Amino acid sequence: MIGVFDSGSGGLTILKTLTERLPDQDFLYLGDHGNAPYGHRSNEQIVELTKAGVTRLMDAGCRLVILACNTAAAIALRSLQETWLPEQFPDNRILGVLVPMVEVITGVPWSQQNQSPARDAEKILLLATHKTVASGAYEEEINKRAPQVDLVQKACPGLVDAIEGGAGAMPLRGMIEGFIKETDTYGISTAVLGCTHFPLVEGYFQAVLPKNISILSQPDIVAGALVDYLERHTQYQVSGTGHVILLTTGDPVTVNIVSRRFADSTLTFTHV
Image (cartoon, rainbow, N blue to C red; front, side, top):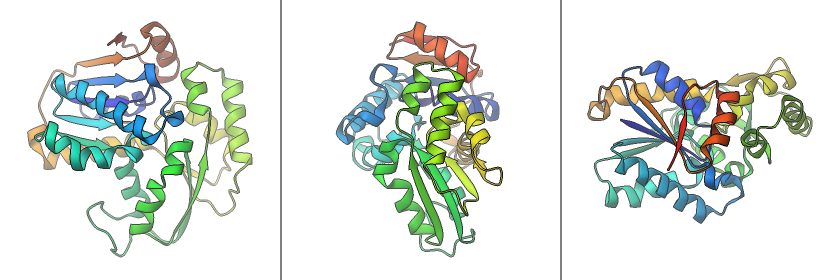
């Protein structure tokens, strides 16, 4: 069984693509809706909340957990991988959504730095939460591998809150339009939705971004990376029946309403 952890419902965009690419795998999803959004929390709180979520999934039998949250991946993943995981669950692994996206942006495998990049000089827009932008994680890792890439970062405060709160189409589109109007998009060729909640409203981003700007799909990229990882690490590729369980630390009634509206999911969340 593979675990998927997110601060809320955004990770459902990742889960959906994972189940399509790996139909024989069993998945256990945990949304920490009770403590969301993470963007308002301190780095220390994000690390502890992520650690608690991963622990719950691994205690339930998940030897491999995907952090389907850019904020958690940017703030907590490295410390969990380097110090906490080897002590607590030495035979288990945690993967994040940031690494596959950086590989695609730079054209350089994660394990290789200071290599001649496959990507030409390009101007790329990163749309993310304030916490992800402030962490500098995308900027740091891209500069290591492809310094010729000009990364423009734009924080979108309040958007995750609005999505999780069930805001309507007009308010959501209005917020996104405001973020794009505040951004100098001249010369930008590609936009990265650097929050797994944002694909839930990707259509609004497409509607307000200049037509010449393409959008990188994080769910597709992450799913492809996991398929490749499982082919190279077969010990984590445990065949199942395609069973999917959704858990939440929040109110399941509210979470189900919002999740079904945005993620088109027929599955039901259970409180933990």
